[in-house]
Image (spheres, rainbow, N blue to C red):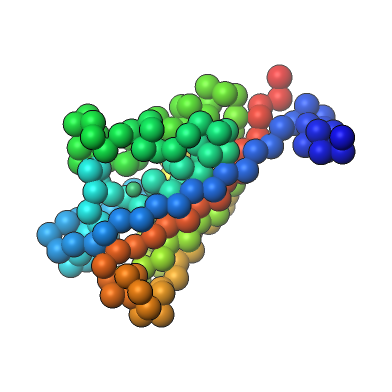
Amino acid sequence: MRDAFFFKNNGMSYRIGFGIDFHRLSAGRKLWLGGINIPHHKGAVGHSDADVLLHAICDALLGALNLGDIGIHFPDTDPAYKDIDSKILLKKTYALIREKKYEIVNIDSTICLETPKIKNYTDDMRQAISNILNIQKDDISIKATTAEKMGFIGREEGLVAYATVLLEKNKE
Ligand SMILES: [Zn+2]
């Protein structure tokens, strides 16, 4: 049983999680990404503020501890979550991770959208996420790519975010 020994060596326990989220884009909506409002002629459509990156990170955190998905914890049929700031959802998700005595080691993520260019905003996003999750900005990676004008992303009908997280159980 090399695996059990390897992953629980020195009383440490690691868990990896993956999350993905999609939203449609529409005129007349604000574009929230990584907790930051980005000026654009279209924004993401959703029950909450539709922050696709924060939702992907929430799903990755939940997935790492096999706690289900964001739809189970924050159903889009619940009026409590109508237009809610997704930073609040991330904060609530982080509380679930802490309840299980885990901390975040690092996050890697990619936002896939055609426009606008977001590289000037990723530093602010990393700061916003760092404030909520109690990790250093250096431990949060946010990358961006276009879809080379292909498909629904290329036509600017929607956007996608992917996130991977590593969690470490607190030493007791
Ligand atoms: Zn979402």
